[in-house]
Image: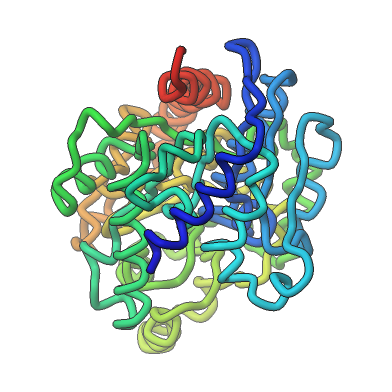
Length: 406
């Protein structure tokens, strides 16, 4: 049924005149739902890619396709004249999920983009049929992780099946695949048997606000707003099993009593267990959970911390590591998956399953100012590897590489 629909779309497309882009300019369409709707993770990635590419490639036209633009990030690209937002109209406003699968193909017919980039691991139906190349648009898809394969029990059966099918289909049909880390590339090859030469590793950057100078007054203001103690370590991330905050809370029992833990993140499946552990170990006065912190306050929350602790069991990238380094905060993270790719020699590492190891490393950071200063200096240098310019330059080369006659 899907191939029949794609064939009909392509038949209609071939009746339309195609604008020919020169090597100097491109029309690039992005799946921008996450850019407008998500506050973290895929949202941060999408906004950074779109904004930086638009700013550094003013002659290219960017089409942002999103079910709607309402939300905290509705104006993230308002000042960019080469960006055009496309939303569903008519009956598609009711069937927004179906619009992302089918309606986008119909809507793009008159636009004829050179490249379609699926920023969040999927492609519309028109680009996944046997004759997709006849559409005249080349496709790129970003894959962030392979969690439904690595941690299937963390997903409901239906969600897991849908997610797997979308990722598998996108990777099979995309002209090129972007993996956000070498670890993710290895996982794509391992789980999907994808040709490694089809996959390009392009590291993501973080939101520009994390690279801004954070004054002492700003740090004090944010500490006061959230009622934070003078000395704390910060852990940023959704409170879920993979993020491993329960192990971190247990480690705090062996950390110097003048050091508190601030967990910043949405309450998910691990939260009841974390809450129970806090009460069990009588750590109510030393563990603070902020599930409603304003995103614009994140840099000051990092900068006010003695260290950032990110001991996830597995990550496709690990953006809080980079955010912390950009804010001048020493990092303690896990010695596994993609975390060493991000941290390099600028982070301290621990076994995420070893409570004693985690506690010992936090205590070292609390008492060794030389170590802290060394990590801050190294972190500033390491963060330069993830500047937005690096990603946009590689993206430009990748887009052009998939186009005919380039």
